[in-house]
Length: 96
Image (cartoon, rainbow, N blue to C red; front, side):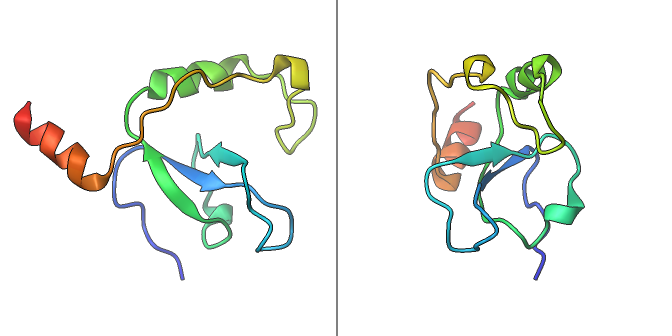
């Protein structure tokens, strides 16, 4: 079953091997239309702010293969993340 994206923003999905039950600690951000991924990976959130940072990472990335692999010493490092529930994001919008 394919569920359409309910919100603007890039989906954040769990990465896994070919085994559907292998997702653990890695994730990926879908930067461009990738309908071939629909129904294949679990989306657990969306980038709703900071897409300029996602764009900059993608523009500067130098993958070594068609799977998007980046050499370990060239991988971007996340220094902070803010996770908001749908309810808290709605409350922030209403307060603004």
